[in-house]
Image 1 (cartoon, rainbow, N blue to C red):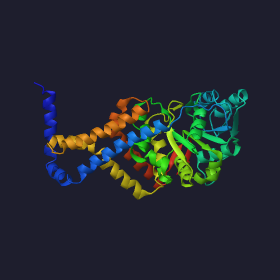
Image 2 (cartoon, rainbow, N blue to C red):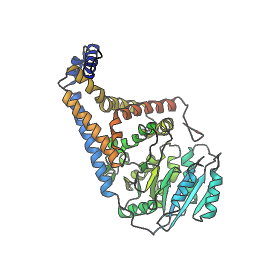
Image 3 (tube, rainbow, N blue to C red):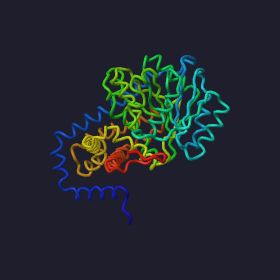
Image 4 (cartoon, one colour):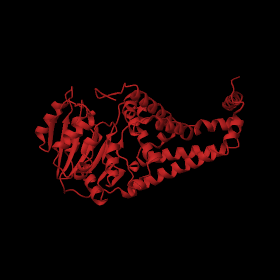
Length: 403
């Protein structure tokens, strides 16, 4: 007669107990320090995510300025024949009146230039440029942005990606929030579109910024550059501020050029804001798990200034303080640890942190239940990013090698 589910669970727990004969000793040794620390950390991150969600909600203004200074929307495109027309058609339908669209065909080998030329012929606001060969000392995207900024005439620059789809209010939203907040630069989360499970477990790692890293209140009040944040899918910045930080020259060898742009703006005493743009711009960021690993991986080690010790210390902390509480809960259950309820509360706090983050981005709440997998994948991508960098292999992105 087959065993019941309860008998199966009991047998598994019994096997775990036998396999971990010294587990209770380990738990008792750690208990005065590790378990209380987990509860403090879990509580902090939960409150941080709620505070950041409130910060974005409180300070994000609805679009209400529909005419004003000239805005230059800058879009680098490299082999974007699948996205070019959708992106430009959406940007050509803005309620804001005074804007131009500049597109750089960054040495594409597909039909990108053919599509851009056709669109530019029918919409005089669109100006298309052929990219120059990549010079020594530059990475591809910073150089593409540099060429675009040299041609831009606007008082406000909007940097955006070719795979974004803009609602009719995206330009107005940027101008409104720069003006109403008296900000020099605004960026934030745009709406993310997931089509595969691989994207669901990788792309949300971007929410790690406001869930576990950067207090947005500090970003608003403190001038330290480490409290700044930006996402390159949508950045709006005043032209005089962009020139004051040295333009693209200041981050010409950075793969995470968006983060460094915000850091340089902040470090020179200007104000940055990180908001929620999800109602006005959307994007399918990566096409599947592998593309997401490369896309995120090329930025992680660079984000930390390529400091190996810092990366490994942070990954150890991520493992023991962010991922490990989940399997630890089952070990506590299997060994009848007195700390079981304690760890259950920690796991619940992490679950609620992720669930509320997804709800805040108007995504399926149940994605938040996958958080242990998010942290494991983060550790994997971080180590992969470090290895590809220090080994000299670099990353292949849109047909270019980036080290």
